[in-house]
Image 1: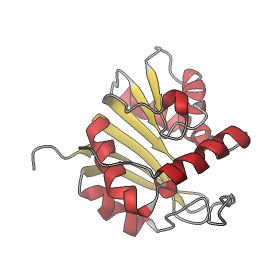
Image 2: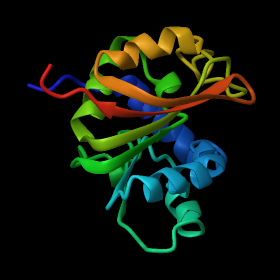
Image 3: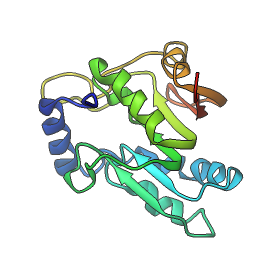
Image 4: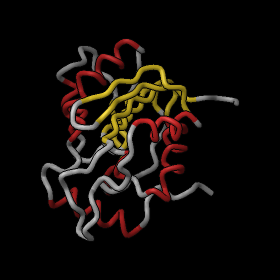
Length: 180
């Protein structure tokens, strides 16, 4: 049996946020040029937008990728795209992991390893979000520096590229560790 990736209560809260807040779930727009560049360099044949929210990454990628490629979306809090995704050459997980419930983080990282055939590109915010959830918590449930995040990812991935971004964020490109 696979581990759950999100609690029912948090899924309902996230579903409501996506429905009620036009700006929520759209952070991937600023990362589209980088995602497109990595997709080209690694010759990805498809991209999975993991934690896709409003699915704006696909719209932005169309502006940066000359040869159209399938871009699939997955978000457990958006009913239309909540089905467990199939693996893809490249997985983009943009501004997602810091929103994961701490008790579910290992299961989510395991799922990212499951769906990543070749490359994972992720961006993670390490500080508080502007948004507060309806229960009073900060929308960034996990506020930890890169030094905390990297060991979480090293258990399943080999990090190939890493860079700090403005506003207490960083991005990385990684490949899955297989057969260890």
